[in-house]
Length: 233
Ligand code: CA
Image 1 (spheres, helix red, strand yellow):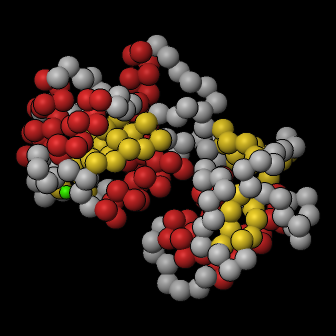
Image 2: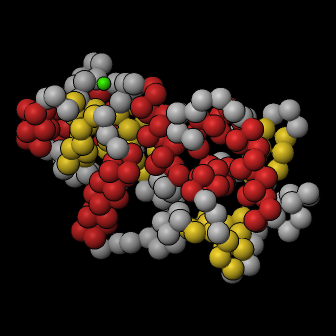
């Protein structure tokens, strides 16, 4: 079981991109689109970390954090603050947040903060789950932390996008992704057009990881729908 991150944020697009990137790193996610729901989930579902926006419907992030600490929770909280509002950082820390990150944030930085804050707590708690970042499909091993792919013990050279595509499919076994979805998720929303990019990347990846790229076992095609990873292989 991976660590669970609770995302409290009212902007759907941000929630989706956070979810995707966190899941790709091996985290499980929960989400709340308003402060009250966020507080409730944080108190009852025992997440390993909370990403907390400031401007939220029903209850703002400062009040959520204050109430959470008042309820005795020690969960790491990272506030998502607006860059212009220098005072937000101070308020957030005073409300009991562990860390803050300013919007618009770099995903790499955010993931690093998430990892650092969860690790800190894990060290505090004296526990560390090993191997949580390792995915397996048949003779294929994908290490999300080291960003490596091995087949039958041999390292396979993949590009970043090939790796991202593979982990996207692997972390959602059985789910069929359309080329548009993959374009959005793997190429991070900034695509201009050509869906053949997906097909080409899938083809190259198959040539690297499949025994017979013509009869793929790992990355399957659902005719007219898209691509998926087989669950039992
Ligand atoms: Ca907001």
